[in-house]
Image (cartoon, rainbow, N blue to C red; front, top):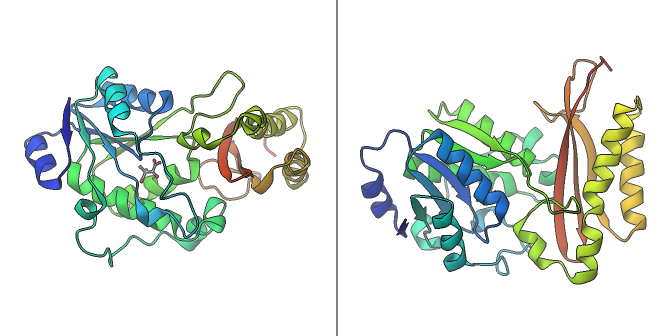
Length: 281
Ligand code: PAF
């Protein structure tokens, strides 16, 4: 596996490739990322994983500085997964001049759900992903469904800028108790870790109530949020949305997603569960 740090070296390494599969990451990799590499391998070659903690997508007071940088361990995991190249630029390599040209995600998507609590986050994600796409020129790119809103932003980026890239979505991997795998789980203390699966539990409970015929979406979400708050969480949101548009579910919705973001101590966790809506609502 090649480890590449510069844009020029990446271009040289990928010259003439037409089936590149890109897996963008911020490193501190876990089994969920490995499963994205495995998905990439089934759809393209060479497989390139990028590792870059992107300052543009972190707000003031967020965890940019303390985000774990674990390049050596990440490379071992990627090599074992059969990844061909790792692109790990530093900030100056990605942003040699101040990034004054940026992607502006539509307000309706950028300021909703996670975006309402992380101003500018999705513009930062879309901007760095567009740069990574331009550098690697992949045929396919793989993202995890755990970041469901991010996945929609990237699908829309590809669609609206006519990028010749197929976006593939990898399923969320979970720990035995249901906690979605995330690099940020490393921040959790022992007691917090024991609590952490409750976010998935609340979303799973909401999904079960929907399947059992409940229809009052707002009440379901409020109940789930209140239960988490009573267990000591600070809830940013619990919401039920149309999975294709992220708009509120309506009579036409056949595929919904229950999404949540909540903080345990200083750690902000997100999760979601997709829900097939069998009958018209
Ligand atoms: O999901 C992530 O790890 C990041 O948001 C991404 C897509 C690599 C962009 O920095």
